[in-house]
Amino acid sequence: MNQKHLAAYVVVALAFAASGAYVGLHKQEAAPPISTTVAPGVTGPVADLYKQTLADAKGAATALAQYKGKPLLVNFWAPWCGPCVQEMPELSALAAGDEGKKLQVIGIGIDSPTNIAEFSDKFKITYPVFVAGMAGTDLSRQFGNSAGGLPYTVLIGADGQVKKTYLGRLKFDELRKDLATL
Image (cartoon, rainbow, N blue to C red):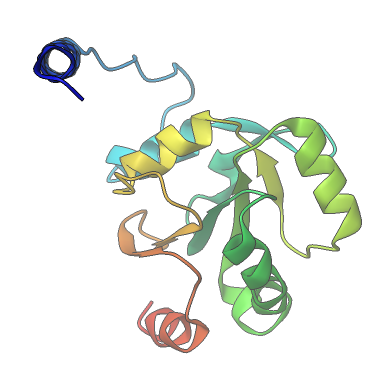
């Protein structure tokens, strides 16, 4: 590579870096969706979660506000995510077992309605699964998932406060210890 090409590459790289910095500094956040009010004391991402109305795997719209007042385990996942799929049988067992009597498990799928529906038909998931599409990534970021990685799970207490977040495949021994503190 000669000096001319190297100089051209450096100029192009600097131009992209400068434009990226400009966009990052001047980016405006999207306005939160307008919807129902939330119980007093519930703020931040949990309040935004409870404001959501999402379609389930069969397409029926469901208001997530129905889960207020009960401990909630929210699992952000996608059908193409290997670790997400691997932890689903354990999440189903958790939801169907004794812990499921004290805790509501929900899945928020980050994919198309068709893919979520096909996946749900193929694998018998015992907890509610909702379709959020790419908006689910934005919602998970509000809970601290800055990289947008999957699976991402959020443990919310009955008081509406985030108790813990988990990035990656769940370690169910650790989760059960955390559930015991609710």
